[in-house]
Structures are given as structure tokens and as C-alpha cells.
Length: 306
Image (tube, rainbow, N blue to C red; front, side, top):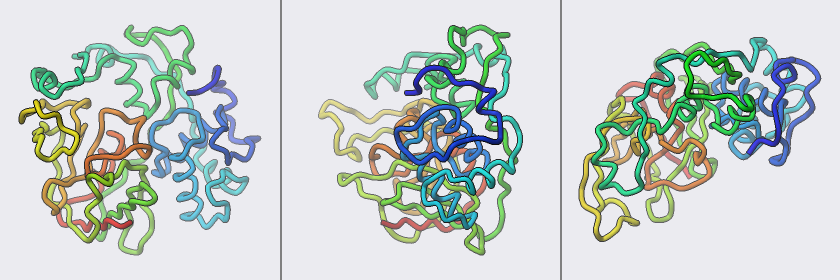
């Protein structure tokens, strides 16, 4: 959790940032690094102002791609490369009527109760704003102490995650690494187009290693819960169809793999990405899954490795 307040004036300043290399570091410099990595398509996952494992992975991948010998450190050379993107990293945003219009709903724990809901929507406007700006709700609260997030017209500080969209190109390959907990999209020459932290299968539901293909993409799909496919299902659980929505178990998009029952998809819990295990599938934050889905097409190779 971020400590204290963040100063947007410091975060927006392109010079004078210290080297960042510790999982215990947090604050304006880390926030700047996370936003710039996100805009460069080296996702730190949920932007939270803390230099954790996902930010370290993103920094290491960015450094490798730029030929910078700094490991997972945000070194002086890393800052120079990141600061070529000179747009502000924190901006003012006016909360709109759409942001607070809902629908919103408390999401129950039990699958049978979730199946009763007409849509698995966000639970409150702060959650929706967090996803919109790739940010932890706690970070938004720290950036805007005392502000109300459920009132249209309120002006708040948010991470400026707007970036040029990735265009689909021929020869894309998706590579999923179990050990690194990452999903990487490369072009025909092997150059990294995008790098994402991922939640990967557990010992109960291991990642199906091998060479597969992307079959297709489903936007905001329903989720068909079959307890027979879940090792931790309760004996009382029954098959159920859950409505679409960002808090659906597969989130905003399902990227179907040629391995039956397996795919790359979003999640209702972005803070857990890269830090927990899944039921065999590959989970990304909703915003990263959406970006990847816009980059790939049926027939793209998906290589799943240890």
C-alpha cells in the first residue's frame, strides 16, 4: 500500500529521479516509472506506487529490449530511455456521469449467488476508475485525499496511461513463461511488442506446456462454471452460467487457445496478477488482456514454456 501522499509535481518532473531497485521503495519516482513502463507496453500490472515484483519484471524486460545493462533496476540509463516519453504521468481528470452511472453491484463469493446477477459489474465507481487508469484504488485515494469518487464533476489526479495503441502485425507470437510469470508478444523478428505480468497455473492445474494456437477472441463472454474442472470446487457446487462483466471470472476478454478449456483472459482481481496461481489458464489484468486481444488474431502461435 502506498505510504502517505504522492506529489504530482514531482512525479511529472522528468529529471532528478533516483535509481529505483528495491521492492521496499515506493513514492513519486516509482509511480513515474510504472506509468512510463505502462505507456511503453511493458506493463507493471496494477499501478500502485510500489516497486514490487511486477514492476521489477517490467523494468528488466524494458532494459533488455533497449539494450540497457541494468537488470531489474531503474538506472540512470533506464530513466533516459523512459523519459523520451515526455507527456505528464499524472493528470487532472473530471469524473463523468458515465463513471458514476453504473450499474454497480456487490459481488457475492458463491458461484451459485453470482449466477443470479444479470451482470457482474464493478462494485463501486472507485473500482471502475482504478481499472480505467490501470491503478490501485488505494493509489487513487492517496493521490486524492478526502475526495469523493462517486460524484460526477469531481476533479481528481490520475495516472496518465494514454498511449498509442498497438497495431496487429503479421508474424506475432505470444510466449507464456511459467517461471517468469509473464506473457510476451513479439513480432516476426523477435522484437518485444508488449510484456505483461501474468498469473499462471498451479501444481493442481499446471500450465499446458507446448506449442498451441489462438483459436479466437470473445469480448465480455459469459462464464460457464463446471465444478468438475476445479480441484477446489465444493461438493455442493453445481454447474452455472455467470453473466458477462468486468467482475466475471474471465473479465473483459477470453483469448481462446487450441488446448481445450485453456485461454488467456482478464480478471476481477488485478492486484493478484503475477502473485498467485490460477486454475491452469493465464490471467492478465483486464486492460492488459484487452490490449493483447487487439494485437493477436486466430492462428497466432502461443508458446507456453517453463
